[in-house]
Image (cartoon, rainbow, N blue to C red):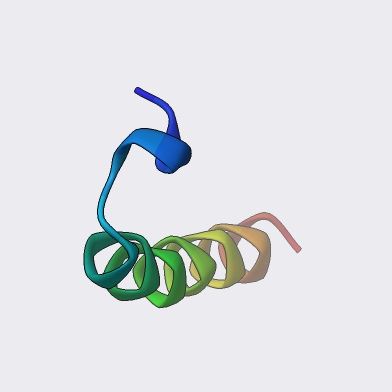
Length: 30
């Protein structure tokens, strides 16, 4: 699924969530 296909509201809501997941993953791997 492309972010471009989603409404801006959904994209803006998802991005911080994915950022948080990436940060927590990096923390557990570090």
